[in-house]
Image (cartoon, rainbow, N blue to C red; front, side, top):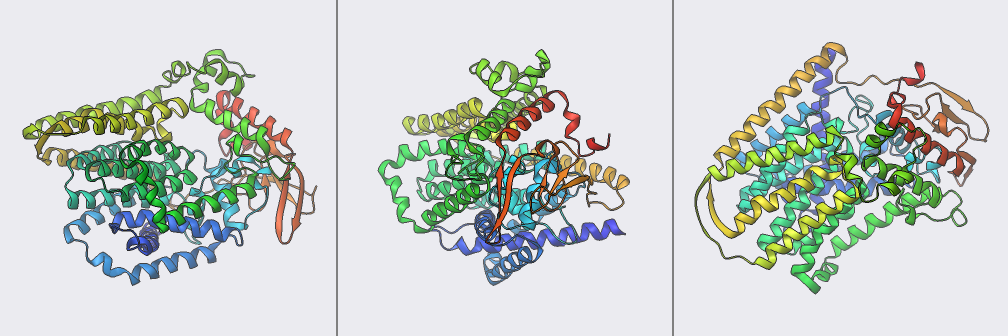
Amino acid sequence: MSIILNISYSLIYLSFLFFSIWGYGSLLKKQFKKELNFGETGIYGFVIIYLILVTIHFFLPINYFVGLLIKVVGLLIGLKNYSLIKKIDSKLFNKFLIIIIIFFICSLTDRVHDDFYWYHLPTINYIHDYKIIFGIASLNDQLGYGQGYFYLSSLFIDPIVKINFIYHPSIIIISFFLIFMIEENSKKKIIENKLLFYFFISIILIKFTRFKEYGLDVFAFCIIGVLSYYLISFYKTKDKTYFNKSLLLIVFGFFIKQYVIITIFYLIYYFYKLKLKIFLFLKDRLILFLCIFISIVSMSKNIVQTGCLIYPIPVTCISSNYVNWSLGNEVAKKRFDHLKAYSKGIKMYAKEIKDNNLKAEEYLKNFKYSFHRKLILDKGEVEKIYIVLFLAFVLKIIFLTSTKTKTSNPYSKKDLIALISTSSVTLIYWLWEAPSMRFGGYFFVIFFIYSLFFFIPLQKNNYILTFKKFNILIFCLVGLFVYKNIARITKEININTNFPKHKLVEIKYQLSNKFKVPIKISNHKYFCGNIKELCSPNLNKISVKKLEKKNNYYFIYPNKLDHLMKIDKELTDIMYSIDKFSPTYEKK
């Protein structure tokens, strides 16, 4: 009975969140020169909520009361603008409901992301329990990652479902993303966008069955998907509104997940076509205001928490001579090199040489131009690329067999070359800087393949396509998606009688009274998990040099040497002792 009640409450709560977010987006719906559709409105709802949450956090924690107030206000705004929903065609609305139900089924799980106890939950607990803390990254530098997603997650905490919904921003935005594309395709009839939709929805249904495995990345993928869709729409219509909206989403996406900034290369085509007219976006006061406001509050938040505009990008860090709580350039570079080396195959290289003293800087220097030789040894990454290539092959076959007639089409070679160049430069930069499929690779690779093998033929010829076979493919993939999720849910229910609630692993701690404000030192090397209040992982137990309270704000000053040693040790354990990153490791 408790399982039925839990699932029922989850559905009600998800619906509440869905329409609350849409409500905030509806504030912008009529402000754009061309109105946003239903799905697009929901996506921009996240932009408004993010701004509200980060701004409030400077003065208050995002606790249950503050979160409930924000959500209820969003719902009331949505109800006030309910007339906008009633305008949606009934057939489209039914498709929307199917999407929401499918992804609700996908969301039902008691499993959590691998990094949940590491830094996801500690960061969310910090946002939920405290207003902003100066130098919070001094406790554990990962608390300073500038990922705005955790602010959205903190809003989704509920007294009943607790932390079960912290990854649901991804479920909601993926629903809005697909709804956006379906509604656009039903109105504008751009064949190129329809094919892009089939490509995107296919890879989502194939790879994102268990969305918590991708956690934050699903959210970033959807933003990249919308930006790709905007680019194709601009190519076909030359409507500069797409540039304005792209600029806003790139800025917002960057502060959600930093690798979204790779999409800045999409602007190459906009610059090519608009030239000096591109600066007309300055006249769009709403877009300009939102871009500036997002940048100011996000970077201010980052400076307060880490002493860097964007941690862990070293050049953005301010010296501790000027900002006492700053982690500084050296710690940021150590963390940056660690993340970069990991994305460039250091783990594969480590398996070859078995050297416990291997450093990220050493690997990056030795394999500066040849790291891809190590990456191809990662069977998981190679398998993901094969799946994308196989999907492209299947869609190409369907495309060729669904063509009734074709005639030659006059087109601009320069425009086509500019778009292909834009796609190519984006892919090359991703391959050089962050060559992991989970860092946006799925959509960057797909967009490049789509540009070469689908977009070019569609510009050279006028095709009359039937989409019956494409729809059959999606129908089959939806069936497989639902089947795999129901099979997974059945297994999880047999194990957990309180499904879908996740049973938290309790991590023990020791209390340090070194400072006036006590710090809890976790017994786990790397995890604080669900330890409330100020907590430091065991390997960071001497990471704080000084802790004080001024004007009702906490100020924490770092011991940088301890952070440097911890990051090196962490990399070694990731390569050779991954079992240490289990939340139960301390009990062994």
